[in-house]
Image 1 (tube, rainbow, N blue to C red):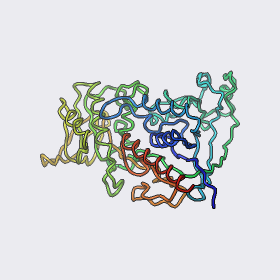
Image 2: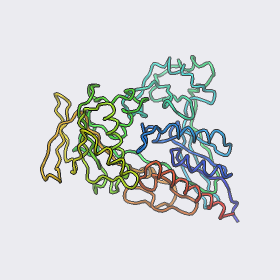
Image 3: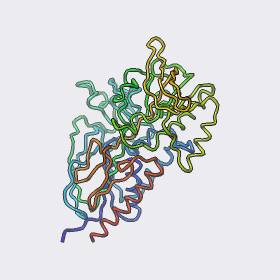
Image 4: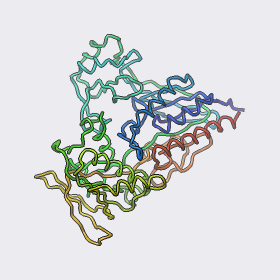
Length: 417
C-alpha cells in the first residue's frame, strides 16, 4: 500500500488559491501555496473596487494574509512554478522551480535599493502605464512586503543597491532553485488573464492609445494606480468629456473566446460609476449584446442605467477609427433597437475584454481535459481545479468554488487513508 500524505498543494496564490489554502489549513491540514508572481493576491490586487458594493478589495485580502501569517500550517512560495507532477491520489511527487528574487529574507522594505537604482522597467502591475525602478516593491499592498530586483532591467556592473542595503538583503548572484514536495492532493487555481485585445484588430488596441481595456481602466481609477486615481486619456493626459464601453470584446465569439466571461457587464457598469463620480457631465455610452446582471446584480444595473448621461446601445461595435489630429475615436455600430447604423465620437474607449484561463497556455502537468477555451473540464483523482481555472467567475463565486475545492482536496486525502 502506498504511503498516504495528508498535505495539500495549492497552485496559484490568487483569491481562489488563498481561499482553498486557508480553508484546508484551518481544519488541520498542512498546505503549500505555489505562486508565480512575487506577491500573493492575484488579479484581485489590481481591482479598484468590487461590484456592486463599490468597496476596495485590499481590506478583504489583508484578512486572508493575516490568517496565513497566524497559521503555521500554511507555507507559501512566490516566484515559483510547478514543473512536473507524478504519482497518484494520496501520494503525488511535485517538482517546483523557485526563480531568483535577488532579495533575501533580510529585506525590511525600507526602499533604499530603489532610491539609488539608476535603471527603470515597465510596471506590469499597472499594465505598463508607468515605470518602476529595477529594484521595486510590486505594489503598495504587496504581501510579502519584500522588494524584487528585475535582473533583465539592471545596468551591467551596477551594484548601487548592494551598497545601499544595510541589511545585506541583496543577493545579485541568487540562482534558481528546485524543490520537491510530496502531497496527498492538489488544487489547481492558476486563475485567468485578460484576453489579448490586440487580436481584435478592428478595435485598434495597441495602435490607438486612447483605446484601453477594462483591466487598464481599473488601474487608472485606483488611487495607487499610475495617475493617482484620475481617469485621463493616455495619449495626452487630458480629462475626458465622453467615454464608451464596448462589451464582449473577444467574448461570445467563435473566432476568439466562445464563452461569456460573466463579469464584463457588471465591471463596465461599475466603471461607469467611476467616470460619473469624477466627471458628472461626461457622456457615457455602453455598447452591448445583452446586459448580464443576474439576481442581486439587477438592482445595480437599473441604478446605473437610470443615471444622467448614460446611454446603452444594443449593438456590437463593429469598428473603431481614430482621428489622428485629435486622438478622438469613432465607434461604428448598429443600433439594433433603432435599426440604424451609428457613428459616435469619444475621448476614450474601454474594451470589455473577456477572461482567458491561465490553463489555455500553461496546462496542468497531468492528464486533465479542457474545453474549447482552455478551462479545465475534468481532472483526475486527487487533482481538482478551482475558481477561474474552471470557468469565468466573479470574486464571490470564485471564493465559494475554492471552498468547495478545499473540501474535495480534504476528502481526497482522507479517502486514501
